[in-house]
Length: 442
Length: 140
Image (tube, rainbow over all chains, first blue to last red; front, side, top):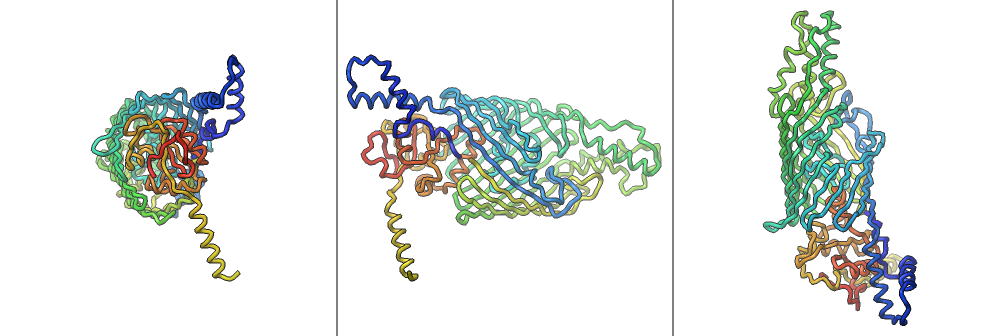
């Protein structure tokens, strides 16, 4: 990372600016006596310290990831990426973080992020005011990142992570990444460890659900993150709760169109019932996560667990992963096992019965009597596991190259995990995802 | 030139290069009374601890990766490679937790910065602080 302050005043030799100010200072001082060398040095030192305290208060840092992915199967969308063809946009992104120090205790920070899959349009992923109440406590207000997992707050900073993409069975679950609100960070020492307690509250907008645009919101969001750091070990626990609202649930349209199409093809006439209402209004969601990291400079071990509970027909899930890596100089090969399980499949039995199947007409002579309902049920059957083998190469501080291969599979019956088939098409039993990236911070 | 001569020249050059660099030391402002131990210093240089144990805010200043002895410094005082130190600070800065630390290229600039800031701590070559009363060595 480069820091403009380091090029500011405070150099050993007097810069032109320092000299000019020194001369200006002398000019307005009544020359009642001649200055000794010592006095001049003292005066210069004072002026230099004043300059130092007025050092540039503005700094710019940034990060960039250029990454590609490809799957060995096609006919669907996986993690918001159309499968089959190589994709260089979905995982590529870059950002500039601008900081302005307003006073000794207060600063404004914004992170302007551009994503390849959004046409590199720039938006403020972070924008907040941070104020140090005292040496241990900082309050921040504005647009912040949800601190839910070990890498949540630096989710887009590929350089900070061992993988090209963090395990999607866990990291892919949370649709919210930023929220508007306020947080507090309190640092303390206890039991020989450095602790940080971070309570927060606010609300979040959900830009998309399963890759479909949505005007959804998470209201009344409240949570905390507690992190402890001792030597090579970092442990954290986090919890948050919110009220989820999805006014226009997009998959209902798709399911209705599928069933309408099937009935028309069979000459069974149009569905007489109206499109089902699958909107969600302030349903309660709760999220618990635990993480553990060990890194002694040679061995790196990571594990995280997350439990999500959402009232109603949304899937409740349990996720976890474990990663082990070993550094051979600049190279670090690593292996990850990751899975997600749906805990309440019975809550979506509705999808295979009456509400889309219109009894008065003849039953469609199809293997599934409600293909639209089955489509919705499969979208909620998130069960999957993956094995990922990868390598990180630290080319030099601030620049890393990464590559990895993931075998994804072990879906529920009738489900395809995070693979969303095109239309009512079938999903593969398992498939490979290959990813590579160049990650920088500056 | 035969192979032996090449090898001998190379070894001699390495030896000269090796002796040309003085040991690296950590310095604070002369007015800083801290008696921070090695573990405290490691935590401060990683941004985990933001105060000196005695008292006062700690302002760690990093050195540029273009400074030849930075790797020696991170291994000796932080126990990590420059890449790991970079990753650590990237995590803190881009999560908005801390202000970006100052990154300094030359020893002269580093000594000057610490002599002007009572809270600063950074790493320099021992040669750079000989006879300097404005800074104090806290670890070597």
